[in-house]
Length: 176
Image (cartoon, rainbow, N blue to C red; front, side):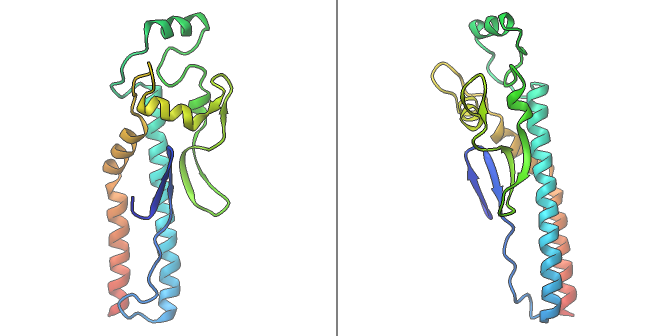
């Protein structure tokens, strides 16, 4: 992934570094342009992160993806414990912890915060998410994160296009 690092099921995105020499523009313009470009990148990334989280949550709440059904044994367990019958939900703890946040270094993240332990499963949410996403043992794969990311990027291609147009216009106006 260009300008980003994938950690578990959290996407960490870093804004690209801007060159100090853009088509021979003067230094004063570069300083202003660079700040504007960084702000534009950050706004775009925040919009994408929020759209991604929204898509993930909607996929879970409305069971939008074609996941293999729960086993009859687990369905019976959910009924007996009065848990939500939908896949990925049970208590709602997992769903409530899907979010967008910035870390101490200011990097933007979308997904599950590391080290949050599910109170019933007694494991980090990120581990639980990987089990659901890729399957393990008797648990079939129920892809959520990869599907949501792919659909979010396709649906929000316009953000990237708007950003590119903005940068090109600024760069060309600096040249003239």
